[in-house]
Structure formats: structure tokens, C-alpha cells
Amino acid sequence: MSQVRFRQALSGLPAYVAGKGEAGKVVKLSSNELPFAPAPQVIQAGEGALAAVNRYPNAIGSALVEKLAAHFGLEENQVVVGPGSIQVLANALTAVAQAGNNVIYPWRSFEAYPILVGITGASSRQIPLNNQGSHDLPAILEAVDADTAAVILCSPNNPTGPSLSALQVRQFLEDLPQTVLTVLDEAYFEFDTSPGHVDGAALLADFPNLLVLRTFSKAYGLAGLRCGYGLTSPQVAAAIGKVATPFGLSGVAEACALAALAAEEIMRQQVAKICQERERVVGKLRENGWSIPQAGGNFIWFAGQVGAEIQSVALSQGIQSRGFPEGVRVTIGNRTENDQFLAAISGIKPR
Ligand SMILES: Cc1ncc(COP(=O)(O)O)c(C=O)c1O
Image 1 (cartoon, rainbow, N blue to C red):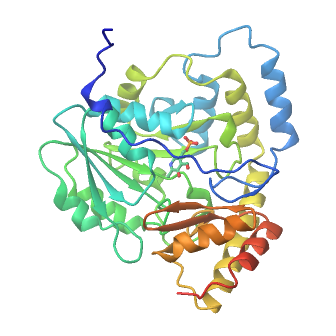
Image 2: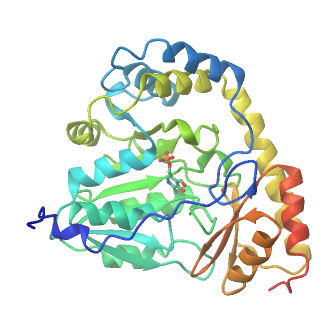
Image 3: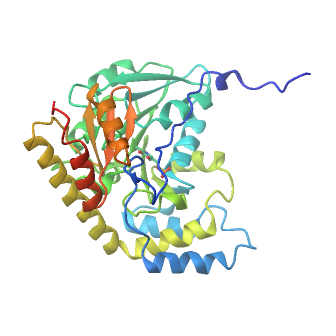
């Protein structure tokens, strides 16, 4: 039987491995989600929008674009929204990269990067993290050549946790050719309390090749809704708009995101609780002798082979974490969940 001919680029793509765990049955600390249910006004807004789903949504999420532009003091033509920041990233890469190009990013970092780069036909240049689990920015710069279409930075870095400083990123952008798109993935921005950390939105005025990615999935606790956004220059936003699927953002997602933005205070309170828990957990672990890198997001990282042991011991107590060859990532949950995790690994020798 003859077979459909698929693009060569598909043959080497890694599969995305989602954090395992069935809510309610296990303690799910594997996907960097928020442990809180959505606020009543967000649910109400979603129900309202659900009643009108016989109609198509706005093609480009105009109401949300307008609100986000006002929120960040940007023009509306500098904001793009989509079904998750992953999709905004996929669109941006589609707009700049193809076979013959390369895209550079730190590794280990967010596991969607190699997949999204591979889909474009471009090759991935993965630059190892330094021994603090942070980006090796000089090595990333050194890897740039005439075929580099984009560089991706992730701050705070998933899965290791450290964030970049504003000074580091400004210097990096000054040293990089402005023809190279720089994506600054700030999916965990709202959890970052480290002094001097980068805020991509504040750099946009000086760097038209910068795309800042943010999401409603993490701090706003709406991972299942699929809503993320990009802040950038009008030129980059227009290119992303050309490749974006029309009606990509559902009306329900747009309505909920608008309600979540309007209730920003709730997000701030919930994020503050998670950060407080993160400091408590990291403090306890370090006190006990564990070496934990700076944790800028809603998760912590145990580097090295002990990761596999932590993952399996935690799982034996019903706690899901996310293991990688380089270590294990554990999401900060509510206090009870975090205590369960700490108790579960209390028999493992700290390192
Ligand atoms: C660094 C990073 N970027 C993006 C995402 C995905 O965001 P979204 O749900 O908006 O697609 C994640 C989710 O785990 C992430 O860790």
C-alpha cells in the first residue's frame, strides 16, 4: 500500500512527555500547575462565554489584546494572544526558522523547545547550563552564526529554576545581531522574587527583535484553559499574526483570561502563598543539607542521579514529580502536599 509522504523534519522529533498524575488520586507535583481552583468570577465569565459558543470567537482575541496592551503600556499591535504560550512560540518560530537555519537555547530547559524547533525544519543548538543550572549566556552568544534564526532564553528556567538578571539580558541583547529573534520565555515570571531579575516587558522599547512570552497557565492557575501571550515589536507581532491559526483562542478562554486579569489581586495572593511555601521548602531542604539551585518559579530542582531516587521514593508515597536524565523537578503545591513530599524523601541522604 502506498503511504502519505511526511516531511523529513518529523522523523527525528522527540515526543512531548507530559507530567503524569491524575488529580485526586495522587499528589500531582509534576506539571508546575497551581493547586488552587479558579476564582468564582473566572468560572462565571467562562460560563457566560460558553452560552455563546454557537458563534465563532473574535479571530485574534482583540478584547484580550486591548486589555494586555493597556496593562503593559504597549500598543495593541505589540501584543499577540494564542492557545497557550507554546502556540505563540510555535508561531514565532514558524515565522523565522526553516531548514538550513538553527535555533539556539539552553539545555536542559523546557522540553517543548526541541519539538517546536524541529517542526520548522531548523536544527537545534542546545547549550549546556552552567553548574548553577543557569544559562551560559557567553556560550549561547558564541554559538550564533549567520544561519541563526532565533535564540530562546527561559527565565526562570524550567526545570532548574534560576532566573536571569535584567542586566544580563540587556547585555546579551546588545551583543546579539538584531536580525536574530530573541524569545524570552517568562512563563514563571510572576513567581520570581529574586532581586534584579529580568522583566522582558521593560526591554521591549530598546530591542525590536525581542519576543516576551507570558501565560495564564501558571500564576493565574488556568493551565487547562490554554491561553498565553507574546509582547514584542509591531513587526514581529505582524509576522506571528500571519502564521497564526485564525480563531486560535476560544471565546471561553478569552473571557476567562479577561476575568482573571481583572481579578489580578487574587493571582497576587495565590502567587505569594506559593512563594512563601517555596521559601519554606527550600529552607528546610537546605537546612537538611540538600543543594537546591535558586528557585525562581513554582518548582524546585534536585540535580544529578539522586533525582531518580527522589522520583521513585516520592511516587511510592503517591507523589508525582517530573524526572529528567539530569535530575528531578518538583512543583510547589499546597502546604499539606509539600509536607507529604518532604516526609517522603526524609530517608534519602541529602546531597
Ligand atoms: C518554560 C515554559 N514555557 C511555556 C510553558 C507552557 O505554557 P502554556 O501553557 O502557556 O502553553 C511551560 C509549561 O510548562 C513552561 O514551563
